[in-house]
Length: 260
Length: 254
Image (cartoon, rainbow over all chains, first blue to last red):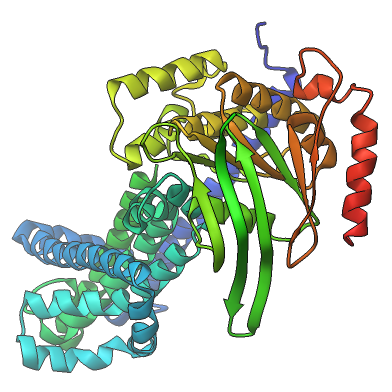
């Protein structure tokens, strides 16, 4: 039997497409309106563009920083630090959640510690990290890891625990071991949760890395923000923030891409 | 016929901080090789616990469960749960080979046997499909093949049709019943559906409410030729058995 799309279906699909287009238009419209208003206010001296910068000034800054090679240098350093701390966070927290799932006793014993470490404001640790690890990349990466890791462990462990008990029973009825339950059922059924956990982690790693760069870096976008604000180069600060927005977006989208 | 499974004075109690809950009390019965036995009882009476004990997932507190195998090999037990629990992240084929995969004995002969079962039971063309693309009945059939791939001598069926709608339930029960007969398997079915028990079983064991004891054991003899689960429902004695079981269950206090 040949399937023919009915006229109503075509109308319906057109409708959906139109709605999507309108949403996209509104999204782009907001950012454009914001940039235009910003530029007009700066040009008309309604705001002081020395303090508030302006789209044109940011554009010029990007151009000159690109030419000098500074833009690539600072951006790539922050990007690399974030990727490394995000990757380590994800791997370590999955491994720890697996161990906690395998050993109920360990999970019960460690639970209060994880809860306290998770609620602790991690920026309080940063000065300690500098003393212990120095003012280098290691400190910044560890700062990035510290922000996300405890929450990530708790969340993944909770997810693993919520696996359908009947599916676990199935593996046992087929003669499987606890370890096989873990990697044949618990991990695969936890993949959607692991991915949404990664989306949270990537943002938090970026937060940690920027905190680390504020305090301990000689390069990177966090460093550029602090340095720029100290020497009143607010164009640098604004440019760095814009680049951070784009980086966060890119990292988030990359994980979303792997989700498919 | 030879005895395949024998339970002697089996008791089991659930322990929790709130207290203990006796589930099974002094249960004794035997199952012959090739027999289809149904166990019925009020819901929550410990029927599923009984299967867990027979399968070895739990150990009885008191009493003995003995499995007799014809050769000197270990008796393989196949377990079918209420839902099919096919993994959505695996294709049908990768789902049905799960047992041998776990036991790391997926030989060429096993693969051929599984392929042939998929073929016989109409799932060959769905081999590389995801479980969600199959109907409820086909999923249950895939779940049975996954169980049969373990080459079990004894099949334990824990209300395997209860998650299906009424119409599908009857046809799937018919289907699965025929497959089990054809593969010459011994089976124990736990159900709360009286007609399902009568239509499939050679004997019905009636349990009381918690703590469950064996109230009575009723052999089902239907005067029809070519008995299948579906035709059983038209047997003249069907109604009498239904009323008898109903009375036995009711007297036990549902």
